[in-house]
Length: 200
Image (cartoon, rainbow, N blue to C red; front, side, top):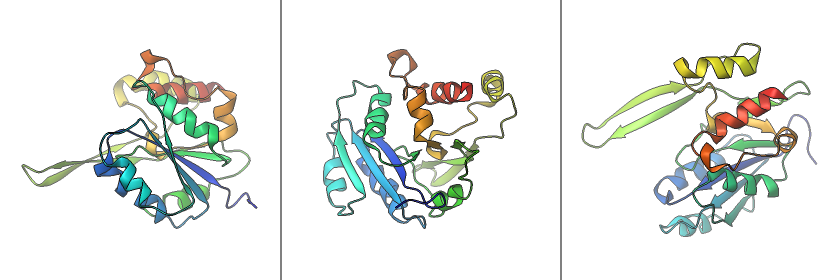
């Protein structure tokens, strides 16, 4: 069913009251040139039009779950991880979107020696007042030993790995016990995950 060149990619999208962004995020998945994916939207019981927006999609590859995560987004991601069927996991924040060739381009690097793929991403700020966009690139090349590079240079250079750029083998996430749900790690749980992966 799945080949090494075209494996199933499970895309986990945690969301809460991001209905005004979510359509763009999901459309960017549907429009991917790489078609062997499943999208798992994990909703922290949004009170906006999130449910209505998701229910408009009739694509069976899109799954919709609800959770009470108590403000711990790692719980939403871990629920998506638990039901995911793909050998590769991708993360997409619900206010982000991908270019249509993102998965196809990243899948070129799938091989037995690769467990995590990431790339630079661009943060776009919109200002209605001034009607312009300010763009900032996030992500950088990592040097070996990876764990040391992540730890030492984050202070000056910020996180090297943007969450919405990552594809990682599910078995690696399973090996480290998923994403840490410690409340003290909220907003840095992704960086903590990269550190724990670097150790293995």
